[in-house]
Length: 205
Image (cartoon, rainbow, N blue to C red; front, side, top):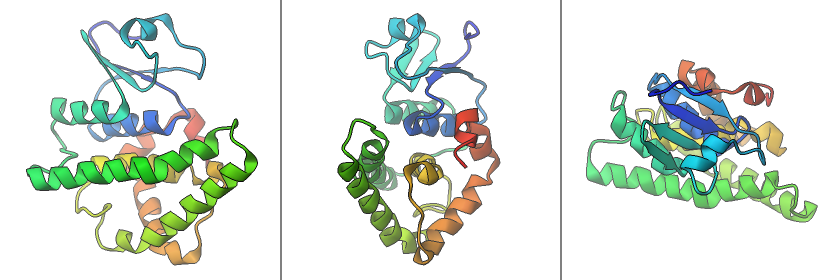
């Protein structure tokens, strides 16, 4: 139950889009009521503020926001410390483009793998594509402490929830992906990441 006048986030405890918003909230140490929403069981309060009854949905007093990237950018502006987007327009544009590419190239495949309505062959092909794509970009993770950045960013907040789910997705990265595996180990141990995990997500590993 949400506390009146306090920030509330409707969130699926197993969903990687909800996880990315919870990660932003945790990194910024925002006090928020996390309201778990199981698939297919939309509470009336969520339907009242979001015409799509989708998660994640953020409610900040009279404002309700949905679609994870909209919510993440709002939180970064509403709670500016620590910043999770670069201060300069060109760098911000590059970050937004990386988020778009993660969405198009990797989130799409994750969603296919997790969709039990898909044929086994389709899911297997998506699993193969995701494993090969992540392995192929692994050298990029050796260059900076974060993904193509010296600081934690919204890009990492989109990527880490996917990587946390690799065991559930049936993906084991090969030895050549060591820079990516090191990135995962380093950031899964972060206080903010650990605080972002739901009980369901903790059981994924």
